[in-house]
Image (cartoon, rainbow, N blue to C red; front, side, top):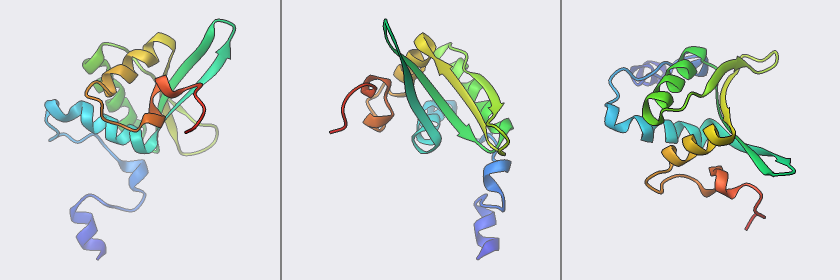
Length: 129
């Protein structure tokens, strides 16, 4: 069974060895990033006197993978996403954007209406339904 899973790229410590899919067609790049964001991404905010200041981020155990995601996001929507930064003393890294940059990335990721409503910046500050 392990050998069968390895054929499909499932290996020990997969989250730390994950790399960008070199064979991924550029036309599917945004959808791939959205899918990864749905699983390992987040939106949050700080409340300021002027309103909510949003943050958007993606987490992975692979720094190299997040560097590739950051390049793809910038290529796709023209906005740089910061990082990757190590999360404390863990083996995890995060890339993130805040404010206007987070809003632009959010709009780009969800431009076709796909994605979880709870992972949208527009959902911040609303009571759960």
